[in-house]
Length: 378
Image (cartoon, rainbow, N blue to C red; front, side):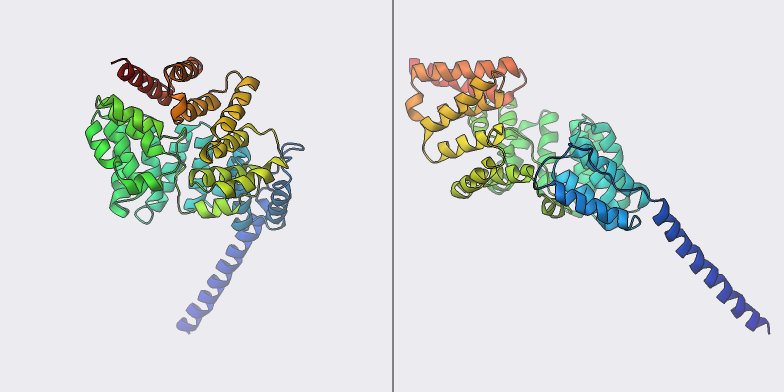
């Protein structure tokens, strides 16, 4: 009889637990917040708005389902609508606090809005949840800690990342950056003089670091050569969800990013086609107009490229990006490397430094012009 009573009570307890769990999920669905939607007129992109509305409707139809809410956040992130992405990801981590993806994406959009300290704290949550299962939160945390000047903390995060995946690109870059910060340029140069790393890291970022390292080592000529091949930005490193984010890129911003990638890869005819399509939506976009000029330069139409860059500068006398591109284009054109041509280029770079005194690339190129002029005088 006692055994029968135990079995009867066991069934009752099981039923109570099932009812409690079901009740919890029903309550969670009822109390979960509605989707984050843009204000009227905030999003006018003809490619983007229908996608946002679709995912927002799916969130509101089933508020307890994590998938559409993450899709909505990724769509905002891909479109660089970071405040909307942050609000959406914040909802996600509140509802699903044990999922690494929510904390990671929330940290990324916080950092992209300039909230580095906040992003570091958020990413620490992701790193704790990921443990030894995933290297990305650890190396990303290490890179941000380097940005914040917290080198010893960065080393600890990078050590964990190295124990999981020892030869990843971000990890190598992080080690080189630490070597530069710790006044060990030779170590950084050894890491960065890697053709595979140079090829795989986008926008000439390795050359940016090599420029800094060679200058710290006192090799001005190699520093000038490296900066001449460097890009102007810091790469956004791929993580386990990068492909998903890119899959949600259905905006004019996404089209710009694709054009940039095609130009960097030297696929100029493909870039041209996409530029023409882009101009049908937004013909005056300055970023794409610069890319259009870069295509001209890469196809040997230097005069045409220079005219387009000069027009951009005429429209905005503080456009340091177009000025720097103009200077690099002139330096890469043999017939403009005469004494008079170098003087014009030098003046352009001096204006860039006047606008942005921290522009390291302009300083290195300016030093390079001085070296060229000195060699001509000898």
